Length: 290
Image 1 (cartoon, rainbow, N blue to C red):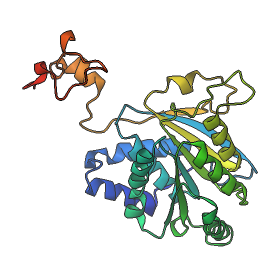
Image 2: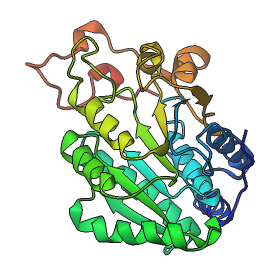
Image 3: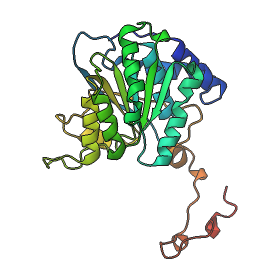
Image 4: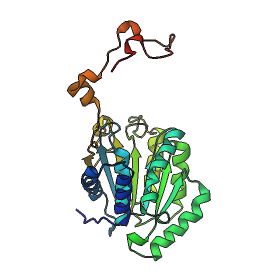
């Protein structure tokens, strides 16, 4: 297992998240420890191999802090020499915008110049990326003084395809990269396993990965059943799995339905609406419900 450090990107992001009360002070150590554990399983940033590929599965409860985990793993990745970070975000424009906004915490926490942020890039960004590649090859080897690029891309063939083509035109041999697949159970898996032609999003992700000879794909999800049950020979089958702990005060299904059932108010059957009779407000039984 590789030796990892916590540099100014990780330290700065953690301080920013605590100061903005995104993470409680009591959650610092857990977030750092779990993020380091995830990164330790990834393909090492320094490798003598021309090709280094790993796939990981990261699981956490619904709305339990998976995005914060992605941010912290990204910051620590930069501290340890990873150069390219790709976030395959949601399947809608709103979700991509939300993800791009959250990932911008990296810039706020660790200096604007250190991070190059791109969203759904096209060929117009080729010159900027080529300059970065030259900077990585001939500039300082100290991660604290090197820039990293963060690319947020919609989980859609119209955006994944151009990104793959853009990266194919660069010499990225030996350039360590992380690919985060947010909500990895949605659209990413091959829905045509018996068909010679795979499903479009799956094929586009494969093209993207092929353009990055040194990368780790981290699949984040709260519903890991499908990624766990795919064939072991599928390229998305995970080499390792890690868990993300829910933050302090997290309330999910176990709280509402097991520990605190009094928090759940039942809607009687005669008040359940159908598509031809949409409600204009809360059901009568729920007025004044605590």
